[in-house]
Image (cartoon, rainbow, N blue to C red; front, side, top):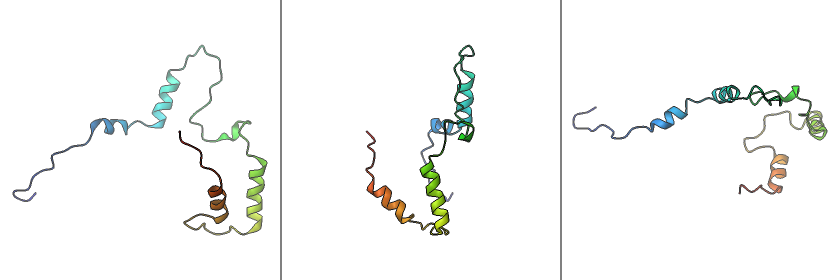
Length: 101
């Protein structure tokens, strides 16, 4: 520091430093440690990233068909523009936005 200059007079909020060290894995471990072992209900693994092992999580046929159609059309064999793909932008612009309240 130069002569006569002052040091900053404020500091960080310590509670935020502590909160930023908590990970998703730590929260999942905490939940798993507090389960009642006598409870026989099945547990949904919250940290499982691959839904393919669960038969109830299937891709809709219309979504599969849309991907196949897009691949076979060769209209999308490029990088998307930074503003997005026009048909997708039109679709989402036409749909009503869900309320947050």
